[in-house]
Image (cartoon, rainbow, N blue to C red; front, side):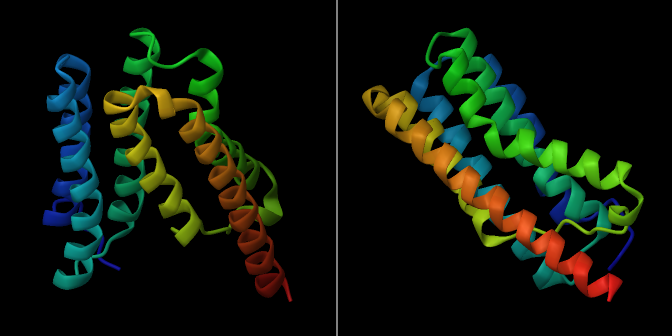
Length: 176
């Protein structure tokens, strides 16, 4: 894996931080829909570009999910402030992210887990897709918000279980 921070894929990832800022500043629903779509496309493109250009890097592996989280956090925080999400819905939206942060901290605190490597998994990517779909749907079909929040919660729980199993299986192999 390359170590360079300045690569096209990393720049594409970082563009989501600017898109997050734009999302907060723009109030027109269709402009926000466009920003969500562009954010989703950049999420796909950064990984594809890294593989295509063979510029995969440790920095990119951290920047990509961080940029995703910043965009989603900015969007749902905006929705919360504007009254499009309740506090409960807001925290359900963040279920996977909260669990991931706790898991990461636990892995850093417990000495036997320190070498643990967190890699993107299919269910984790699915949570991000469902979150982006929900961000759009909340704007254009707000009556589906409750359904989407429950869906995000369910997919998040499945993702948490999947990551936990993968982490423990990986640890069992590295200890054996």
